[in-house]
Image 1 (cartoon, rainbow, N blue to C red):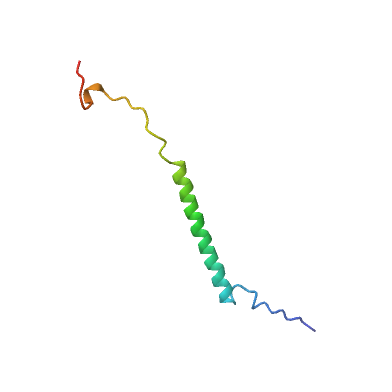
Image 2: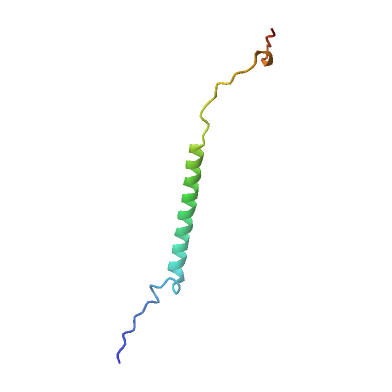
Length: 67
């Protein structure tokens, strides 16, 4: 019975700590970039859209006008 032995140690994620640490580093960088971009998009969507026109009673102005 001949069995072919396949060496997967170099390709396996759990056995090669160098490639796994590279992968985790790249995954962390990607996650940070995604979080920052999503925060920027959220801030842009909830941005200040300008001064609203507000009715101010005349008796509360700096120079009040009474009836």
